[in-house]
Length: 330
Image (tube, rainbow, N blue to C red; front, top):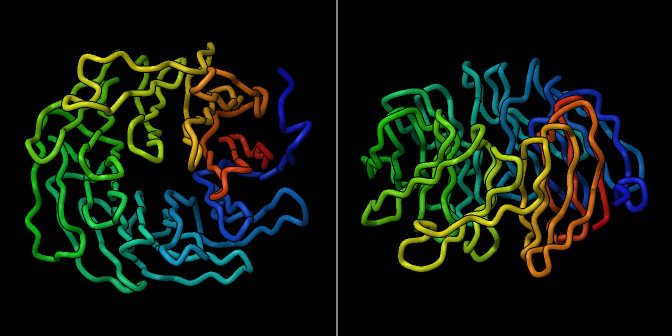
């Protein structure tokens, strides 16, 4: 295979490690470890926007779809417009480790220490406290239910109800990354050990998915919520969520097996096509229907840390921890 970046793509010298990438109005916005946001498209001039005095730790697309939300180790939450306007939404005075947002509900949630801080209309609305430092945040597809992982399990709340006391999902151990299925039926966490734990709601049936050689940090659901792709192994581990018991007793698909570990996964917005990034900097796409694969980029010097399809599914943006990036027509 010849890498598509050389035939149908654009190589980007980003200059810093990437935390995340999101698309706004046909351009990819890369959140970087030097505090800047790089704006780039398939063609044209790149723009670098100074956003934070330090590392951008977290990023999410603003509910208005026109700006990138960024959380930094300078304790600020900001909204970055592609034209260079930087607005400070909040000065939280502690590392903003986690950010999620949802266009349907208009909600933004920042994870700071033990608190999940909820914003509505760019104004702080209320805070939810947790028993230990937050490991991850996730919203369901409608942006109404918030799942927070922490030591001893996870807590699910109605995010806009300030007095919601939470539905505790208990399981011993430290729970780090977290995701919620699009319809809100399943909550899955990546644990400190190399395994996933999950709960089927509302009966809290426990699910355990193990066998990973490394920790899972990247999740991606397909549009219908039938497949959950995960990182942490030498192939993308893709669990089936069909039937009453979801993935229990069913083997996962394992597309894209290579020697390097998978570090990032992203489902196509409308098709059963999965983009996979690896610890050696390589990236591929795999189509489930016929297992056809295509090399997006070859190995480089850093692990792929940012991967996102454009909303129309015709382009993909990727970047790694060494400052190499690309935008590729697929």
